[in-house]
Length: 106
Image (cartoon, rainbow, N blue to C red; front, side, top):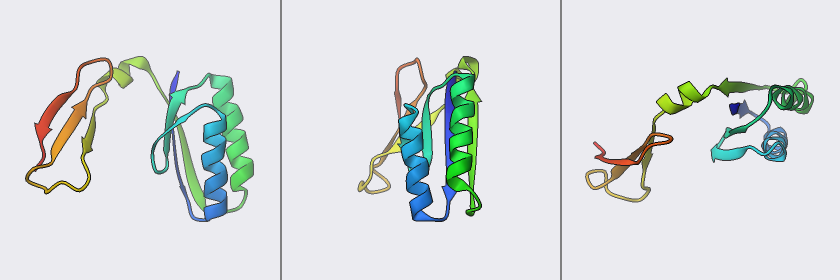
């Protein structure tokens, strides 16, 4: 099942270890503190336990969220090109499994 892993970790060293653990489990870094990928229930539990050990008593939050195919098909994303003037920026709206549509940002 597709899985989202999101985290907000204060300490740089701990945050790097969480980042590396997510990569070790085959997840793709899609935003600064957000990973996405396929994981079985057992692999999600293993990752949860590993992240629990990494974080220990440090300040932070982690969310591991399974996403079913139905909900994934309903997801939407907006991506705006960096460095473009606001009036010229185009937002690319993507729908997994369907073609991308271009929309004007503003």
